[in-house]
Amino acid sequence: MIALIAVVPIAVSHSPAVIFAVCLLALAALVGVDVAFAGRPTGLRLERTGASSTRLAVPVDTVVAVTNDGPRRVRGSLRDAWPPSALATPRQHQFDCRPGASATITTQLRPVRRGDLRCATVAVRAMGPLGLAGRQRNIDAPGTVRVLPPFLSRKHLPSRLARLREIDGQIPVLIRGQGTEFDSLREYVAGDDVRAIDWRATARRCDVVVRTWRPERDRRVVIVVDTGRTSAGRVGVDPAALDPNGWPRLDWALDAGLLLAALASRAGDHVDFLAYDRVTRAAVFGARRGELLSQLVEAMAPLEPALVESDAAGMVSAIRRRVRRRALVVLLTDLNRSALDEGLMPVLAQLTSRHQVIVAAITDPRIDEMAAGRADEAQVYDAAAAEKARLDRRAAGAALRAAGADVIDAAPEDLAPALADRYLAMKAAGRL
Image (cartoon, rainbow, N blue to C red; front, side):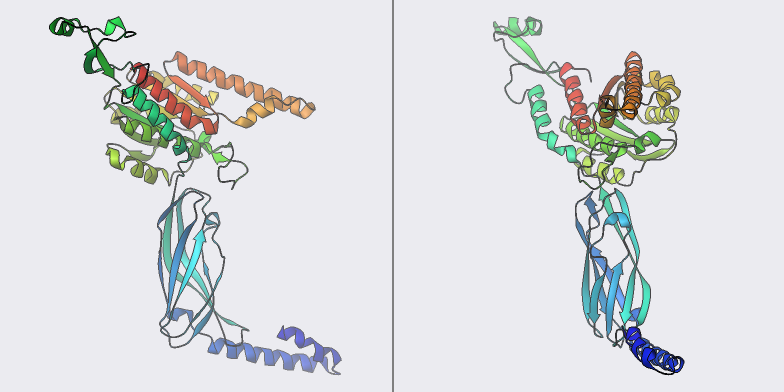
């Protein structure tokens, strides 16, 4: 503004060059004075507090306490340098600290990606008394906020727990679970299966007695997430409406894994977790039931898709090394036919011969939308490509079933409840 004001005398003067030089020297002098009397950012001491973790898209506050240990008043602006995916607001803060005084700066984060958000420095700009110039410095103030998976599928947990109680016989139902663990004896009532009659107990009591059963407990469920290149594709609708392209397949898989883990632990089973592509990215084995979910979300939080082809043979070897007894192995991957033919199919028999295997995959809803298009020539070509993709997925699923694995291929929002329902059905049928 001062520089613009100086344009007026330059424009009306008979010696504009001289006036320009005078104005420039005056402005430089004012700037020099302003810088000389500005407070020093090096005299500020920063301490960071606030939450260390949050869930995806859930706002969290991070606080920086600014203390002026210098001899001069420091006023100006401060910017907490969080990465763009943190969506930090506001971008800048105004502060005014006299010697010995403190100020509190609060920045709200609304992260749009899982993982660790790191902030190494805080940029401080101290302005002079005239507001023309100042001093700027980056001050170290390291901070980390871990963004955990949102676990949106937990809304399906109460209904599945109710179904689990029905299977377990904890509430009256018309159909009892067909588990293989003996539970108790009771008197025969009309409608009971005659094959359940315990003839020895009947002879002792002089009354017809039947055995009751409950689903097996203390079984092992191993959730394996493929973090290779196929897990990077974005599908579905972003539940937080932050990305029009939806979530990566990996995030949907983690959400489904959390629901299954919560349900299986409530059912009395032991749950383990493995994330693998060409190396082990995360693992949770032998966790106590009370600590399982917290350990899972901590292990899942920093996971990112690796843009490499997954090593199925290495994944199967890692499972076999860690899991000796028969278990339910749930592999969350994609039904990419070429990747399966070259990777999982040749080694799948090593798993199915020893374990019960479920292969769960996420289909892209946009494929179905493309397959229905017939409006113009471009849509017809898109529909043909979409139909071929659907046929390939069906062929891949059929090949996996022929090899002895159960297959679930569901839309992103339906994968978690579908996987939980399949687990409950296996519990009820005594297949675990």
